[in-house]
Length: 193
Image 1 (cartoon, one colour):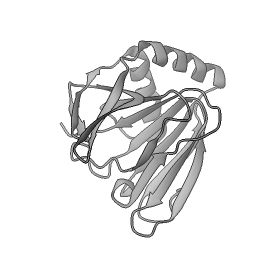
Image 2 (image 1 turned 60 degrees about the horizontal axis):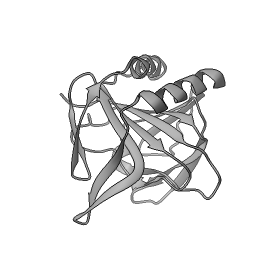
Image 3 (image 1 turned 120 degrees about the vertical axis):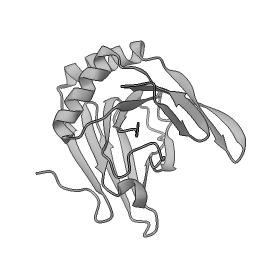
Image 4 (image 1 turned 90 degrees about the vertical axis):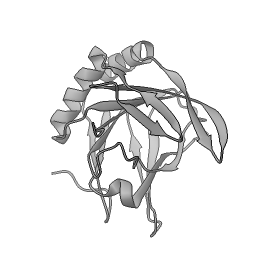
């Protein structure tokens, strides 16, 4: 049985590597070249920003998903993404209808503290994070008690966040000065239809 990484107010489970290194590399190569990557955009304090990080949004339907005041429309699953969705569902026991794909080119790109608590995401549902490519540190920080927990995510590894995690905890992918290559992160989630 997996141990909850959070001491309270949520559930985070690390499955470790769920595939061999060679399989992870094959998926990485396919995802890198077949996903419809676009630079992410956000409005922060009324200013429009275009990030170096690239994203893509896929799902069962043409879901619309808004964060940082930018709306994205889901594309139809690729064969690889659908295969990975089924694999992740097997491990977590949850069902997902969409996936936000993230491409970080190097250690200079990351994500600041945030929660995936948009109204379109089913409340307290499972969000599964699958990593390919570079190994990166990933962190959690309690919103009021300020407890901080860190974990290292390797290529082919799976992390699941569920329960009240998004309500009480922030998470982030910190930037690093280490010479790391690109990382692809797939976050499978349940959008309210």
